[in-house]
Length: 277
Ligand code: PLP
Image (cartoon, rainbow, N blue to C red):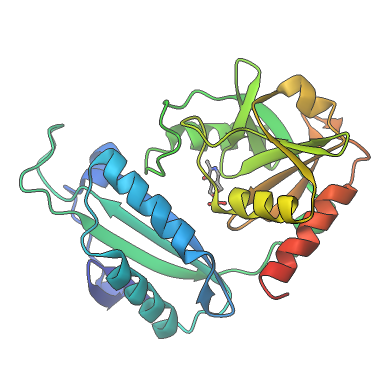
């Protein structure tokens, strides 16, 4: 399959990454994961808006404009005959001998590939187990950067505890998960952390909130506690690859009925309709 390197398409065997890439030394870069349904990018505008926001926030310019980038990704999808899957795109501050100051002139490096992937129908049906983990990450989690060590350690801690996802909290206040956002339902009200600097502003999160409001469900964007999570009627995670996946237990304790609740099911149905399934 083909990779995109800067503006060129190459077979994987011909991809060359510099040992001096700042992504490698410092995690000095940012990324996006796009969903492809039926050969088309899902919610591309929202992903490009987040990419642009991170680019400005961490001062790594995009190597070329969004329109050209969008066209390149469409071309990559076509070259790889991708129907259902993801596009991974990352941009680093480029290559220079290891030193913290921004290299001048900065020449950002772009790297992208596609991966076939099916919808996670089994997990969406059965739900997953989650474990709570202290959120030790930095204070700009709204930037989608390559610095994912906090996420990696949290995910592994959850796996080691026999769960599939880590629900992160700062001193008992739930933020998000290692690779997804999280929402609870209590007395018919959907509650999720506000889109501030402590969480990634998930594209799926925004879609789900839009669907919830369209269905006249009540939504509160406010922090909630681990205690509220444990006492919730329903809980679910949202993300580009997990879509809307129920959380059926937290730290080994059952949430609600122990299977996907009615609000989760309703949102899953509306989400499926939104992607034409
Ligand atoms: N939060 C984190 C830390 C993530 O890595 C992700 C990525 O999937 C999400 C939330 C969900 O964001 P999105 O719905 O845009 O995939």
